[in-house]
Every structure is written in C-alpha cells, then in structure tokens.
Image (cartoon, rainbow, N blue to C red; front, top):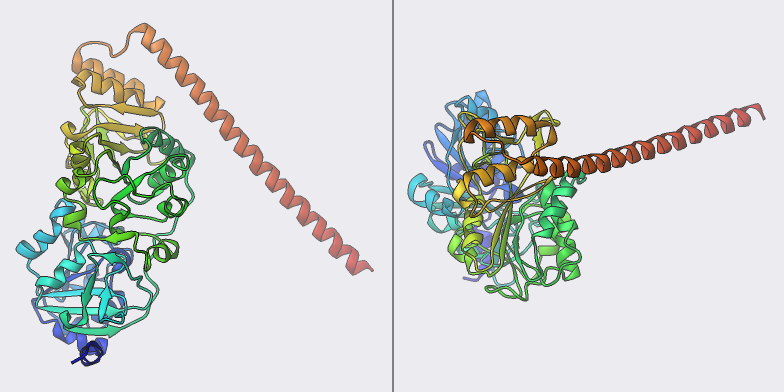
Length: 487
C-alpha cells in the first residue's frame, strides 16, 4: 500500500479522532507555535464526555481551558512551564506543575509521566509520505515514538523543517486536517533599558562565537547589536524573529561551529510569520529533539559557546532565581541551567545572565541581599559567570563572596545601592568600597544619569514636536473645511 492510501485511510474527523482518548488517560500535547489547538478545541467542546483526563503541556501561547472550574473531574492540566493563562491555577492547586531541566523532559514524559496519547501538529505529507513537526520538535516528536495513540493535526501553515523533524504517515494513528494560523510570538519594541543590556551582552561576544539566545526583548536587543560581528554560530533551544536578519545577512553563518558546521540547530521556533518563512524548507536550519539540543554535553562540544538567559532575581551571593516569585510558579527552569553548564564546559565558553536592574516600573530591585522567601534557586551561584544589567557587567567566576557582592552592587540600580551597601556591611563587617572607589563610582554614575536624563529630555521634546505637528495639521484641516463650507 502506498503512503497516499495509508494517509487517506487514517484521515478522519476531529470528532472521531478524539474518541481515541479514554477516561483516565494522560495526553501529552505539542506546545508553543506547534500546539494543536484545532484538536484541543474539540476536546473542550466535548469536555463533559470525559472523566479524569490529564493534559500534559509546556508553554502555551493561548488560553488554558483545562484550568476552568467547569473542567473539574473532566480535564486537569499538568504543566511543564507556567504561562500567563495558567499561573493562577497552579498557585491555587487547580493545576499541577512538574519541574525539570528542559533536556530531561523527553525522558521525564516517557518514563515518569507515561502518557498513553500524543496529540501533535504537523505539516502536510511530502511526496514521500513524510510529515514535518515544523516549528516544534523539542519533546513533541519523541512522544510519537512511545505513546500508544498518536493523533496529528495536519496544518498547511506548519513550515517544513529539516534535521530530526520528520516522520512517515504510517507511524501515526490518525490525522485530522485543520488549517489554522499558527500561534505567534510577535516582535515588540525594544526598550532603552533592553537596548543598553543588549549592548553590554554584545561586548562579551566575539567573532566566531556560537550563541544561545532565547526569545524576548533582551535577546532581540542583543541581535540588533551584533550586526558588526562575523562568523557567528547558533545552537539554541528556541529563537524568535530577532535572529532572522542576522542569518540572512550572514552574520550568523555557522561556518566556524565545532559541531553541525554550516547549520543552525534549534529545538523550537517561537516567532511570527517572518521566522516561519525563514525556516520553511531551509536546509541550513535543523530542528532536533530537546534532549539533543539542550544536553550540556552536546552544547559543550561547540567551542566558544555563549549562552544568554534572563532571570527574575539575583542575590549578593550570585544565586539566580528565574522561574518563581516567592511560592508562586512564574515560568519554569527551561533550558537555562542546560546552557549555563554547557557553555561553562565549552572550550572558550561563557554564560550570561541578563536582566533589567529593576522590576515593577523601577520600584523593586532585582539584585537583592537575600532571594525572596519561598523562591527556588534556578541557577546555583557556582554556575554563574556574567551578570548583566543596563548599568554594566559583573563577572562572578573565581570571585570571593565579598568580590561577588561588590560587583553586583555596582550594576544594581542607583536607587537601591545604599541599601545593598548597608546589607554588605552587616554581612561582612566592613565597607564594600574605599573612599576613592566610592568617588570614582559616584562620578561615573552621575555621568551616566546625566546622559540618561538628556536622552529622556530629548525623547520628551521629540514627542512634543510630534504632538505640535499633529495639532497644526488638525487646525489646518479644520480651517480648510470651514473655508470649504463658506465658499
């Protein structure tokens, strides 16, 4: 039997497909830009027909209907990465949360969670009968190897990607054709703070380095600052739109990578149509399962590996908190520790933790004497290399406790430095800086604040000018209308 006959025999309606899910099942679904919302929506519509079904998912870019009160007794979420739509339900116990390093998640799902059903989204089959997992290979593809039932949403909008991202139609239980726009992570404007952080991060990146970037404002700001670099490589668990210009311009060409030379290696793509169009049918981009991409041993095989990750809080010892705020689960460990350790083991490698110096519109310092009670340490102090804020770079490797604390105080927001200095004195029974250091430190700070003030005033004046131009145009239009009526 040819692949077309196999495919057509397995092609069914979404209503028939979801009947393969039974009461008490554990169902693992794709995540991010590859989440099969077409099938999930059908499950939600028929939720009353199910009892005690556990949905296993990672970061979702949509809603989490499994968390709604009406779902009690029918569906329950076991989340591997907290998202905006399910954080509250994790905190109040409605949903479960499973913590793990990202590279271990495929094995965690297979050997510990043990789902019976895998629900994924794939591209239409090619001329040989192979579908592609497109934007999200990560843990998703692996579940189709060991789950008893594999249901695939076939979506013509899913890009076809190379690497370890294809599977033959014979290896699926059934297919449902639902063409919907892919979930997107659209690029937002980069703030001045993020741009400054990006500038400092870029100063630590050399020609020929291999990068792990991630998604969001800071990675995008780093990308903007790398236009003058040469022969960069890319090996990253996920990326956003920010890397596309660097890839198209040849700044990232992967030609000096130690492994997978000439090819970008990713676990997932978290961008918009811009990124999806770039990776579609692009042999220079390979998508691989996350137990390969994020395995610290594999990461370390790339010489000059540079990882860039963000966080929520850093204490004066250098302990990094990235996924919790007190007892509340905010996100997950993700691949931070995977890449921090992989970059550390890499010949010539460096790891960077980058963050704004404050949170809550400048009211809270991210550099603190002690991490918030109840928070979990994501990256231990012994693993931390560079910490970057908009106020500079703190290098912590090989530093004493006092030296670490001093370096972090110097990149904290000026408003919170006096408090941090007091905490330093209380802890170490001495002042952190000599009078000469304080003077030099204060002068440099005044100069920076002066520059910041001038930049803010310049922007205010620009806005005033634009507003005035708008007013003048409105007045002009009104005058023309009045004249027109009078004539």
